[in-house]
Length: 458
View 1 (cartoon, rainbow, N blue to C red):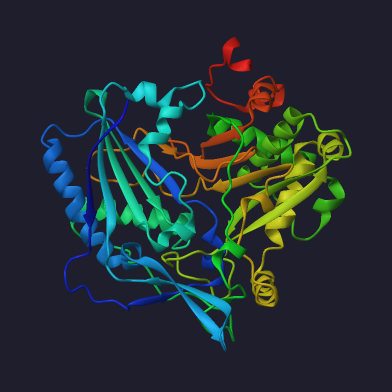
View 2: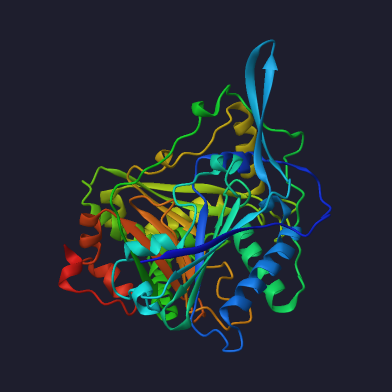
């Protein structure tokens, strides 16, 4: 169904000047087990004046220039062992910025139309996975695999899908989309208005390198293999989300809002509260079963002083709100949203610094199995500038993500294409739970424009 036509290595321009070694923060080292970030954009209206050979050459040339700015992506991970006598006592992982290059793949799936690819109102077809490179790769694999791999796939009718796969050790979703937008801007204008900030952030008194208290990577590396999942995109219009926000705020107990600083549930907190409740019902948990909703949240704007929006690296934590299934159902959207709101509000500069102090007492590498049981895990962000990623070919028709970092209960957030605060969510559930979700009245009342047929419910 898809044919790989070529693979090339793209390197920064010769004689690029930058530091050779990039030390990693605790937030970076924690990403050695998670898979690569995999996202991509579908373009359906390429200009007739841009034949495919010219498109490929243009993208490879602009990627080389972009790697000059985002030079860690052209390197490889490097692990150094620290010895006490003859015994390995710790490991230090960094990025060797050796300009070894990124991977550029050209593929074709000319029998697949954009409509087939998007499958509106249906589960995401399995063939979409082949539009993304480095499937199965985790952060640790960046010692030998490229830290960045891109794939341009031709579809029927002149459409193309441009996927970008980015080692999570190098950076988070903000860094990912800053890179993707920078590549687009350089392709379009041959200039870059917002260069990345490469000074990795360390807490006061924390001196790199970070040492992991292990003698071998096998002591902390874990590869996660999810069960069979159904995955589907759902659209939530500006109007639908506004109704959820109004409902959530109206349900908050009066006494909580008599404080001088009135609690205000955000649009996204209201939306995710509804999703948490709906997925919990779909799973059929008994009332006493504890369930968590986990949110990936940025640190950049919460630190004092704040980090630059262009900070390149990881600067995120995962927060959790936990409740019994019966409690979650009985108390309504407002109460569920309040639990999420409290977790977000408490994520302050001091809270972030305290987490880092605790890390140094017991360093940890994140594993997806730490979060999976009974959880809803929310990643990505509707605030990322995905549809502003302008290569000069017009606005993307859609954004999609690859198969990795998925588990039962995974929710990935994207801005709606029409803007205005609309949101798309990709939800991954085991088949029986997805079938139950597609019958959930509260959920269906909030979804905009989804077509559900009887065959979807089995």
